[in-house]
Image (cartoon, rainbow, N blue to C red; front, side, top):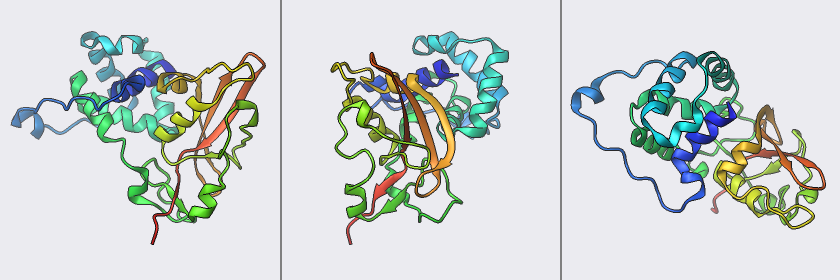
Length: 231
């Protein structure tokens, strides 16, 4: 499922390329009025198969249906990011439509901050707001090499949004100066999935296994911690 997720995520981000993706062309009124099917593993895999056949950028997501359904079912149950992308795949019949949907879902994580003890909104749309002084001293601040990125599920690296977490990973170097993660495609490839709620406020924690010449590094990231706005 990593190959499926990487390719579909790249639709919305151009794998690190600058600029926003073009908006999807407007649908006829009749198409807009049609209710989208429920997002299930089966509907996701059926729609993905149709998209793969006509969208060159999704060629790498081709897989047999049984494997797709098994992996998608797991992703929908455990991975909020995958569930959001799967919804875009099911709702749209064209590459541009999926692209625009994924891009639109990349909202500002500070738009809807939740309280630390509010576990009813564990999703990418609801980051936790912490005081600026705590944010400035959060785990991960000042780290430039992977061997200094100390993290666990209980004490993860803290970032404000998935995009910022990816950007942070691209700044880190191995002991020999090499850069294993250069963009979102590399980050998604090394992301082994999420390990459930953790960190200071029980957000969903992502786990990465980053290969370096000296050794692989296990990095846990809470991408849903932001500084509270001033005032």
